[in-house]
Length: 208
Image (cartoon, rainbow, N blue to C red; front, side, top):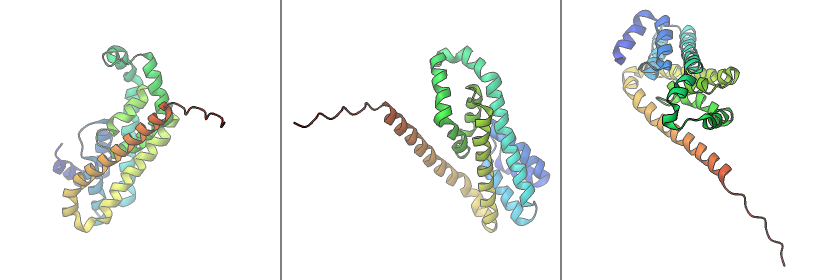
């Protein structure tokens, strides 16, 4: 969807459109979520929207979208793996290992994934597919949705006077920052895996 069209919708229809667009955006419809949230902050700065209901609409839409993705994974993800998983060597043992990985580390991808384009659309679906407990999913994913929504709304509010300049820089700055965040997260996972797979040090021989 063109960003200008989406911003016009938000200007005309307000809180309900914020909720609706963010729900669709989190599920995977191509909505410029960060630009939208920053624009909501700008409209709150101008007084066209009120900051509290704006945050409520944005957070509610984010949480609805992430929950819907989880439910879709929970109800249909296993069928997809059973049907097509053999093309990707996704047997039962590997599914168990991925579920264990989600329980230990992967749940944090639900938090960090909000800030990485493309990742937030997949993490909740994968969490549902691998039957991650809803309580674990909700604790991390909902905290991430709150942090992500408020971060961009407050950025738009704080930079309200420079919206024309800020609007063009949001996407580029976010893409750069999220790429760095993704690399740091991948490095952390690699280091953790390397530490667990490294052979133990041989015992020291007694001195003679």
